[in-house]
Image (cartoon, rainbow, N blue to C red):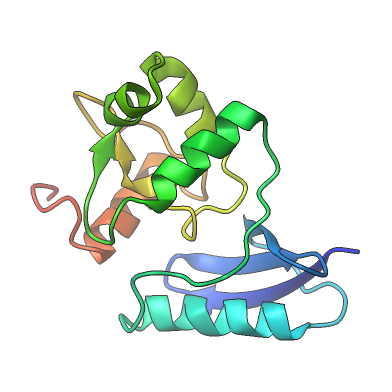
Length: 152
């Protein structure tokens, strides 16, 4: 059974979803659901520390749903340090594949923020963002992390 705990942030109300063993999703504008497990409580604690500027690397068990290829892209995104960015092409090169499927996998990321798809940019611009607020939400997160300093 999936449970959801929520946290109000400057980026909106985040809902953290988990099954018994792992975090399965981060959802914007979610409503609380079910009993808050120790895992969800720890996830919310870490998200709050991220928002407060006290945490740059999450330490949570994750179980994002996705194909084998998407799992490889999710793993590559987890390697992007706080405040840094890579391009879809950079990830594609590391996985020996075209950039377009990497972009599609980023868009299918069910655990944004924790799996930092906002840190992946297009070769010649910001790229898309499937999270709340679209590209504007991505820009806000990058500014928060000082990860895209030439943004106005």
